[in-house]
Length: 538
Ligand code: NA7
Image 1 (cartoon, helix red, strand yellow):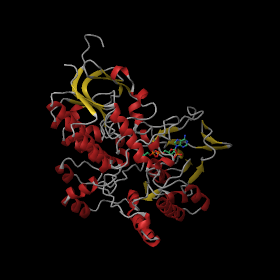
Image 2: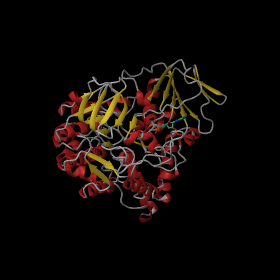
Image 3: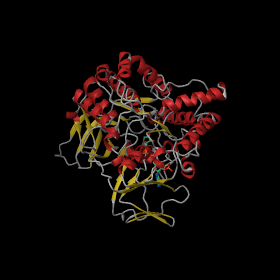
Image 4: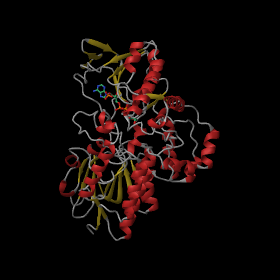
């Protein structure tokens, strides 16, 4: 930094203007009275919902629950239009929140953070933007999201394709006109499951390249029943409380009985009933769905049968039927996904044994077969959770990089801090329930915990908080132990980093929101046990 250079100074710098960053700004600026700035790469707020504009994008948690609960007036005044809000409606809500809490004036858009460097002597973080601009802050809030770093696998010849190329996670703001066009899509994860039925209805022909079929339950999306919304609003507190007590941080109306406690007839009736509830409610079938192989098998087989019954061609039905356990990856919530393969203008190509060989100027090749199209869509997901953090050059004490520190997988205490990186707080990412829950509820819990911690520091005349290595090691062991009690380690998912070649195989999220929250509260009550609180710099 040259001596005459003007560098803006803040108490708190927040990276990302998604749900986490926006609430953090409100909390730190308006409740704690700290000078706070959000740096955001996009041209508007919304995070994941700003980028993921692909056709059919919508939330898979009911809108009445996928929203902030920190302000009762906000939840009373907002009216959701659909049971599962589409991407545009979620952005409307985000805009409303930005206006209501006057957040825009402290958000710097169009600014991607290239590096964050901690100074051991001053205890301050310097953020360097891609433009070269720098800013300094004592607290650094990484609200960078879990599904932000798009994964675009490289294939031989991938620059040679002459048509239009898109990634579902970086969709153009003006949309894509598919009329009269032939389209190829790689991937059949949640994004593709939502996009495929819509694109098939708009384009001339759609070819789907599938490596692994996915479990999906119908969403039964519809306009939100105003009477239902009214009833929820009449006692929103109790409704939210049920979410707070749930394993996944939203009211899923969980069946509390395990496999062994029910007769086969009862299980079947329960499965049919859950299928009618649809979407992620299907996680609530049996209490031991993710911990008992027998329970999982019976639920998996039920959904496999449902899938087969929807697809006319038995060969295609077979390809679309998942062989893995249900819940290995997040169950998708779809609208006519499997039925779309009954259309004349849709072709399914199995690439499970013979991967894509190369991209060509007109399409792609799989072994000896070539496929041609005008538009190529990568629905290939994300370098989930850690990806968005590791794309920033983050350096903590004595220049230690986060990348080096997390070389063998993310290491955190409560998912909130990592030793060697004082005053850096990571929101809803690896080491916390995050993606296994209602993200917004998890985010609010995190921000409130961090804000309380900063308030505690201030009241104690201190300004620095850092996870202790030993406590962090214990947390990593505990997170692994919790995951090892489930079936989730035995199959491939992005929870384990398995979708990114070379990424360490570590189960990243923490399973169990209420337990997690209780541990956070206990640690705070014990004066932030496991963290070192101190004073650094002036
Ligand atoms: P996902 O769920 O990670 O899905 C990505 C899809 O892309 C999946 O079907 C992958 O197959 C496929 N893929 C990835 N790389 C390749 C290559 N190299 N070749 C062929 N196919 C590939 O991402 P989404 O965006 O759909 O969903 C992300 C989350 O958003 C989701 O979990 C919800 O929480 C919401 P694979 O399964 O790896 O064989």
